[in-house]
Structure formats: C-alpha cells, structure tokens
Length: 530
Ligand code: NAP
Image (cartoon, rainbow, N blue to C red; front, side):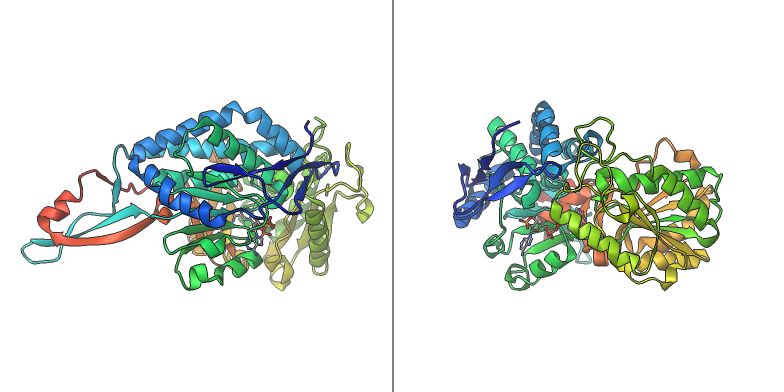
C-alpha cells in the first residue's frame, strides 16, 4: 500500500519530524513494517504555549454554535477520507471492516452528534448553571453560577484500541468547549490518529494550533501541564496510577479524567431460561462482545453471570456461536474476527487466559487442542491472531481472578450465581465497571438490579424482547449516554451529551448586585441537562 514513512508530529501549527531512533508500527497479521514514529526532540514548550495562547483565544472568540459548525465540517472531511482510514485500520489494527467501523464510523457519528447538540447552544459564549439565587432578603444581592471554558490545553493520552473514536469522542467536547487539543495516541496504532489530524489540519477548518498530534513517547508531556490544562487518559489502571502521582495533578491541581480497565458483566435474570427470547439475546450479546474487535474493547463483557441452573445451557449456546467465528487475516472476506493489535498483546492475552485457567474451567477454546496453532485463515501461528476462549466458574463467589483480571482479548468467563442478590454482589466484585447489562423477559423485573448496580457502573444496559431490534448493544458507547465508570474503571466521565462540556469548563459563582447578575445572562445560555 505504501513504503514505510516517518509520520510527522503536528505541534505549534507546524509539521515536525521527531529525531533519534524511531519506533516501527507493524501489521499484526503479516509482521510488515508500516510506518515509523518519533516524538524525540520536539519543542514541547512551544507546542503547549502555542496551543494555550494562540489557538485557545481564537477558538473561544467563536461562539458555541460556530464551533459546532466546525465539528460538522470535520465530519465532512473525515467522511471524504473514510476509505483510507479503513485501509489503515486493516493494516495497523488487524481489524475486519465491521470492527474498523466501530472505531471509524463510531468516531464520525459521535462528532456529528456533538455538532448537532452544539448547534443548540447558538451564539452563546458563556454557559449558565442554574437560576440566579438571592443572597439578601430584598434580592438586591444574588449569585449565579456560570461555566467558562478553561483557558488551557486538553491533552489526550489514548489507548491503542480506538485510534479514531478515542480521539474524536474526546475532541468533540473539548473543541466545542473552545479548548485546544493535543493528542498523544498509543504508539502501536498511532497512524490512523495522525492521518485524521493531518486531514483536518489540511482542510484548514480550525484556528491554527487547535489540534496537535504527538506520536511516540509521552515523555515530558505532563511536565508541561499547567493549572488550567486538563488531561484525559485512556489506558490501563497501572499507567493511570503513574500519571495520577505526577505534580501536574498533585501540585498544580490540573484536572485528570481516567478511563481505565474494567471487568464488565452481563447478568442473565432467573426468568430468562433457555428457550426464552431473553436467553437468546444474552447468548448473542456475550458471543458478539467477545469477538467484536477481538474483544479489545474497554466495554466488552468479561464476566457473563448466569443462574447456576442455566449454566450448562448458556455454556453450550455461547460455545456454539463462538465456533462459527472464522478468525484470521481481515483481508479475507470469510474472516469474521481479525487479529489482536500486536504480538505483545497476544502474549498478554495468552498469559491472561492461563492465569484465569488456574481457577476456571475451559468451556470453549477456538485455538486447536489448546496448543495455539489454530488454522487461522490467511494468517500464520506467528500472527497476532487468537481465537475466542470461554472459561467457566460454576460457583462464581469462589473465584478471585475472574473478578479482578481483565484479559484484553476474545475471552470471557461464565460465572454462576444462586440468587439475584448474589448476582449483584458478583458484578460488584469488579470494584466499579464501565457497564453492566441485564437480560430478562420482564422489563420491570430489571428495576431492582438496575438500581442496585447503578452505584458501581457508569452505564446499566437493560434488554428485554421488546427492544430486540432497537437496543444499542452492551458494548457500544452512545454519545448521548455517559461513558466512564467509578472505582477500578478510573472514576472518569465522558460523553453523556452536553454533560461532556463540564470537564472542559471552570464553574464559578458570580455574586453581585441584581443588575449585574441579570447582565451576566447576555450572550449566555443554560447548559441543557442532556
Ligand atoms: P496503556 O499501556 O496504559 O497505554 C495507554 C496510553 O498511555 C498510551 O498512549 C501509552 O503510550 C501511554 N503511556 C504509557 N506509559 C505512560 C507513562 N508512563 N506516561 C504517560 N503515558 C504513558 O494502555 P493500552 O495497553 O494502550 O490500552 C489498553 C487498556 O486501555 C485496557 O486495559 C483497556 O481496558 C483500557 N481502555 C479503556 C477504555 C475506556 O474508555 N475506559 C477505552 C479503551 C481502552 P505508548 O503507547 O507510547 O506506550
């Protein structure tokens, strides 16, 4: 498709090649070198200063509505180059087209949703947070809360599994807020992010410096983070813990949003026996979540929690679906599931499976004879392909590892429970997750578990037969809904419609004479609740 090039960084409104020894990006199926990246030697001070002092004021001179128009123009630019993005994803992420769509079309859909939501804010430059409240008996002195865009930079440090969506689901909110973006994609799949930024920069849609990309190591980035900058991190809990300890946050009080790993679960309610529609929905969703993007989704179902009396039926039905999954080179049209993103991830996943197998039985292993030499279509045993593996733990409460080890691949554990109270307790053994889904033939029967699980999950996704065709999927992150999760999931909040704007704003209580409080509302609009 192309000869390996050194992908440049875009900082301070200029394209700059990194120095030193570059890092190679490879095709996880063929092992071919695709491109190189390096961020060594960049003038990071200039990068942050330019974004903060030049791009920020220019962005904020526009109204929310005008910035929303820019998002719509970005959508058109990305759509025009969509085929190239699919080719990059096939080569660099090893994904089949339907899985590339989750990332690429998911990004475009999210941006277009924010373009529409942002348009409703019109020509405002300030967001209001609630009505004026009198502070004096005669109402002469009052308070009104306002949101103003933070006068800093939004730094995104992203994970490898969503090079497109991971950028735009965050940038939609930041740019709409008027905050310039510097994105550092995960190195292994940085190409797609870099290319999308290049297309948007070339289209000249945003004030110079509004969108920068740094490919390669993150070294030095957090040292530049000042008190009004915000950092949004997506990745592993271990890296998140390192980041949180940085003086940018502990001393300078910059804000950090963390989306980390998560032991998401799907819970089959006792009424949903084999032969009922809800059972089928559950089985389909578990198998789908295990195989979409080869299980490399932060929201993927890791624990499928079932009444112990339905355990065997669920195991057989999920295994039957998994056995139909053709794994291999995404370029072959027969292939339904591509490879993992790299050989390093393959090693991590195989190690993770072995770790779980110490306490869980193996109910299905698509890798032949367990010797990892499965006949992958058009891909060798030395590729990053791994076939689906379903593990099982009949007595869910007896497990430890299945509740605290996230294996980031096509792997899930079927977990048995005795009663609904135990099912809720088992789901919460994940210590806070991004999403839990519920399956029942009775919508109202899901009320109690939905509310009982909401305090430990960023999203509760409930499904009954009435929504077979309309439900949006356990793992699909809808821009209208909150994304993030408490505790182990990182404690972050993203998306959720215009709620996303809050992270990029500073809230202030303006107190003063009634006339001033009234004047504050000029050029301002109440931040809608949704
Ligand atoms: P990772 O190893 O933690 O890396 C994430 C990002 O952090 C990469 O850009 C990485 O750069 C960078 N990084 C690594 N060490 C750093 C350091 N010391 N300082 C600053 N940045 C550093 O995670 P990953 O393996 O890419 O991603 C997989 C994990 O992400 C999974 O656990 C998954 O659950 C989680 N995830 C969560 C969500 C969510 O929305 N909650 C979404 C997707 C993924 P390099 O690539 O250059 O090392």
